[in-house]
Image (cartoon, rainbow, N blue to C red; front, side, top):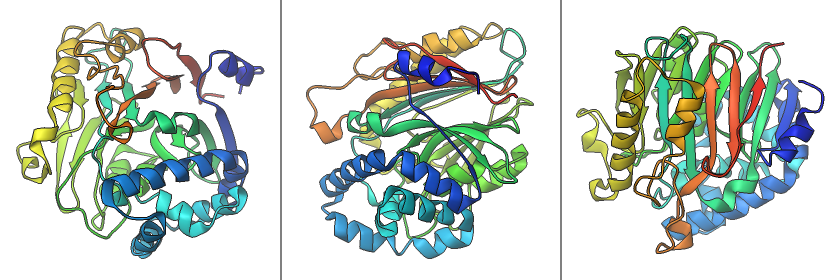
Length: 364
């Protein structure tokens, strides 16, 4: 990492950089030590969200999360080891830390967000493959997010935006594979593999087909819309629920997704079709804006879309709606563009309209 990078990132007020390497337990322990205060803060925020959305006390949520553990251990035992290491490093009970990874315990109300655009060399100005993402979530969680630079033993190194250094939301690895995506609200949630586990496992993939398998395991409890892209320009949006999925391909060199089902096959899994207005708007707006750029798309032109304010506060660059309950508010808390061709990441903390992106690289 270039000398002085941490100082530069601090001056830019961007996401803190956390670096760790080693075997799963060892790496998790290092991250936990660095992010212990963020882990406590994230547990507090998630506990409040769970109780508000479901009526569960945190103790009840912890007990219920134990039902998911056997599925997690079978699907991805090394990440369970990483969580155990994190728990030790952060001095948090493993049961609490694992419950923080079980988003199936949350009501999705108020936390729908994220706008994604992925493009390949068919539509960029210079042949690059780019994946762009605005993260919309509760502002209470903003200061828990870090940019994790991980070097797991024997596996690709990666950058990931990560809540408390524990829960990745999106990332890119040194094999030129990225995972971005969007929260969905399927009506078939069940006991199974917590949906954050496939997100993390994709970052171990060395080829696009492997990433696709990791992103949609058969025993999943639920699913995000997982967008997997690679440096060769292969781009898939995997619209999942617990029991079904649709595979959307970027046939024309670009793909847009927000927080509702696009494929007619998956529409029947939409829990509350009346609640997706903001998502539908952001989808159509981003689609229109990217189609205006075809053949001329650049990192900077994607940043301009991510900062768009039409329909504010429910815009692509999303702002808090003062008319909503604080735990129902969703707003953009960070933004990122992955350059898979050059293995570079452009990241900012906060909203694209009032912050500056910092560039980092996985290249030696």
